[in-house]
Amino acid sequence: MRGEKSCSVGIEAGIATGPAIPTEPTQADGLASVLSRAHYDAPQFRYMIPDERARLRLLPALFSIAIRACQVHGEVQTTHKGDGGALWIGPRAQLTIGHLMRTEFPSLRFQWEWASLRRCINVGLQLDKVHERLIRGPHWRLLAQALEPTKPKENAGKLLEPVHSRADSDGLPCYVETFNESDLAFYKRHGFRIGGGGNIPRGGPDFWAMIRAPQAASLK
Image 1 (tube, one colour):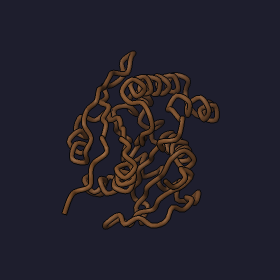
Image 2: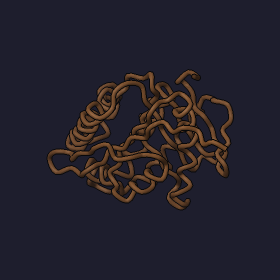
Image 3: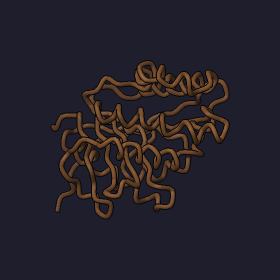
Image 4: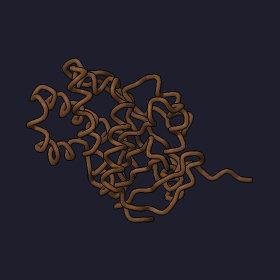
């Protein structure tokens, strides 16, 4: 298996992946902006940052942190044009969302209101609690994925294929959480099944945790 400190770049039309290469800072910033626009109205972010202007301003920094963490502890898949991406935590990483917040959030404390930080921590801790209960051992964890909002949503499935193929080859499951019930059908089409779920305490949204078992190669 390749080292986890990498970023795989895919070709948008067919996601034929090229060699793993480091992401340039300008690419990371652009991807953070794409993910922010795509997830701007997602339930978890509306809960964490209720003010629309503040959410528009703060989400790019949040996604930049996630991108950097996945470059070190997993992989970042992106389209050739940089108009979409998938952030994965790798199977050998010990990174949790709670750990990521503890190490990275001090840099945001002067930008965020304490109430928003508290809600963000609340989300992370609850996701980690369910994650720890549902899946043990090596696995790939999808932290976030999206295409530019103007792109067909189903095309985002191509972003998942490289890691899915590696997971299948290595006999490893994949794991993802979603706060959008409308996303369940999308993930089911790509092999995920609902493993559990939960609710963010103190007025937060519901979420679903989904697991994709390694798939056997089709016989021709």
